[in-house]
Length: 244
View 1 (cartoon, rainbow, N blue to C red):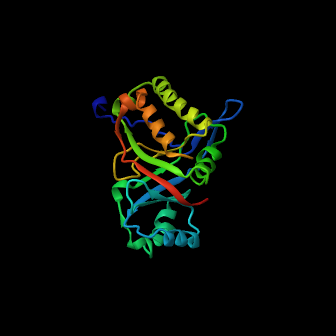
View 2 (view 1 turned 90 degrees about the vertical axis):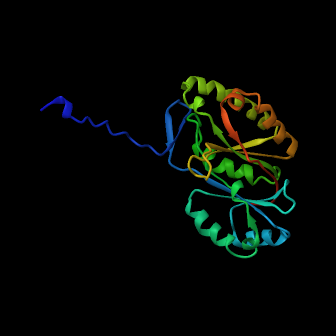
View 3 (view 1 turned 90 degrees about the horizontal axis):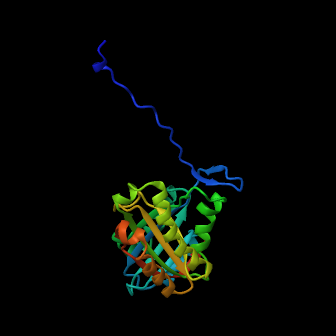
């Protein structure tokens, strides 16, 4: 048999769906759980009291925001470990009064999932409990949510180069968090939205100005100034109802 006619199959790749972290001994740990979060934005919300009342009766887990940039706008953030929640309970709720009377703004929809960076010691807190605690904390009602897409050049960098760039970005976030000025929620949204975005960032805090300032500060980082293709649209709101 001629070697020219031989077909060499590539070795099968192992697929691991779990998120990774490291324990105190430096050993790799894993958890195959994650939280899905979705932000839906509406306008023509002339009365919001009935929206809150309906959410309370429905026992929906989430947050209702008053939109800053639309006097008739609201944003509904919901979350669950199961994607079925959004096409089940949430969809059923939104197809009934009073939500069915609102005008959706699909261009503002954001849908993502929590993820680990590989070094977290408590994966359940990183992936599940901490994001919920942050968005439902009554002391942090202000929020800015936005999607972003990195450039292809960033993906071509070595792991070490990426790590250095992300450390610069993350250092700013940690400083604001330790000062209780802004707290972040990081979501991956690869193929989960209608736009080709990579991540969704949520910033929550006591006041709006620090949330705006941290975005301004991060404009000067290498990641934002050199390796982002797209940022936004931005949803800015204040929570009037929260339920874990």
